Image 1 (cartoon, helix red, strand yellow):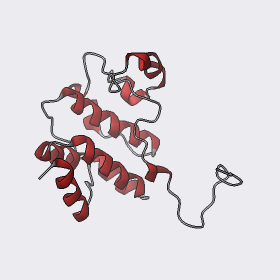
Image 2 (image 1 turned 60 degrees about the horizontal axis):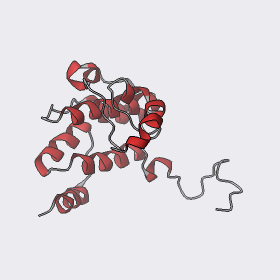
Image 3 (image 1 turned 90 degrees about the vertical axis):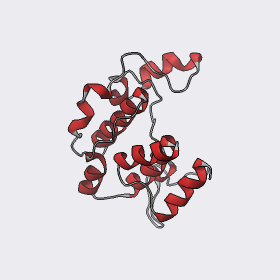
Image 4 (image 1 turned 180 degrees about the horizontal axis):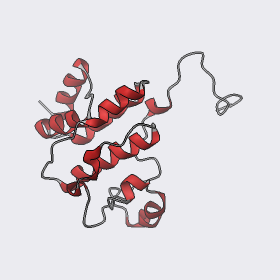
Length: 156
């Protein structure tokens, strides 16, 4: 069974509800990125600050990939700061920081932009990403009937 099939099978049961599950499931099935996207959808649909904090609190196990270890800490810190919950203590562990810069885009032409745009939680771990590295369509989802001044009167 392919990793996307495994992820789809697990996602029909439920999405990962913590970054710890992201890493455990990702290590088991070879798809940390896919499970992280599923986790983000789950996180953004949660409205309770205490539940959001709980989703970030359990430390993911350290894997062999230093970049993944640092990236998950950056994700936890970034989400906590932007959603006004406590940053988990585990994110300060020295094993959650890179020693050499990492540019996930891999495009030399974007490096200068990434140096400027990277949110602090990523930049301090030497991970250079775009301004919205955790964007998911669900992040901006609104209930039917809700309105936003940014979307009112829009013709697009």
